[in-house]
View 1 (cartoon, rainbow, N blue to C red):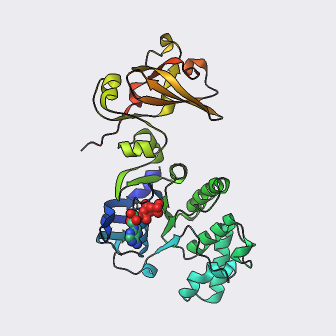
View 2: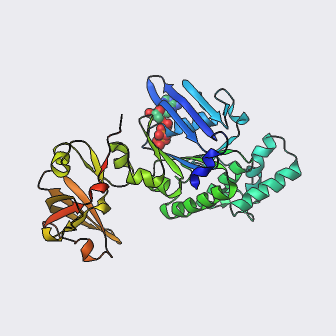
View 3: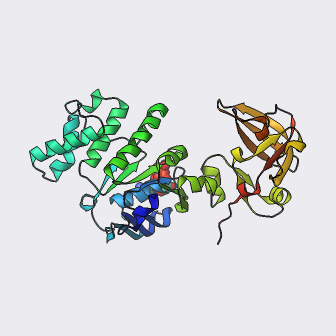
Length: 352
Ligand code: ATP
């Protein structure tokens, strides 16, 4: 059902051969991407991978060295930021401290010479959308971090842009507030029906909120997929390593364990650990013996690191409420047998 939206008209954002160089630094190295209307789309990747530069080119703050940016099918590559139907929420919110919350939210409408009465109404509507209807007369300094964040959101949606660009918008919040705001942002996006293009280096945040995610690495996109597909079917070793915890199996270990050369990934929760080889389920085609190096209690789950007799090591994650038929917990130094179903071994070498 998420996909149906893509059939409707031109994409909200289209990037074609997009490239940006800063002197000798290639920040963005030729990117092609389509983002559908109403999609919550995340650009995820490590620091310096080019996400922010892409966002700034969509906003118009940065001119591409090559390639083009289209919004709703219209080429805007050479258009100034204010004439594009987009708005940006910055990590530091960039609120005016001497203005009230309402004045901050109205600001964009004032620049566009919207009449005063309409400005008032629309600012109040935007503040209510972010649950700050009562806070219009305060100044930003009199608000909590989470509330300031929501003022920044209200200010960005008051113009009713087609696309909202968000650059690490939750980066300044503590973990608990961040989790709450993740849920709120998702609700707000659904409610408004605006396309959200979101930059983050936090994989959990991207997985929680997004319809689709593009994983960036060194100015290129490694994979574009739904959170589930990114996790279950990572296309490259980089994605397997960056999204969630993954065991990457390559070289000799791949040949010995799987009977074929290549690079593979298996998620820690797909592997079972047994004290007795006789308990390995018959449908588990892959088995490996080893010694437990470390056991870490994580509350709802226990993580073990096992050094394999064949060389290399694997991480095993076991939910603590699982029954013993689904594997055992073994202490440090125990000799164990690992097993998993062949279908959970994903080839992570891109088909080329
Ligand atoms: P972060 O998560 O740290 O913001 P990012 O993935 O958003 O990282 P960018 O900020 O897009 O990465 O930077 C990509 C590369 O381009 C980096 O090597 C960065 O140093 C470089 N870069 C970005 N802006 C400029 C600039 N104005 N001048 C020179 N180099 C720049």
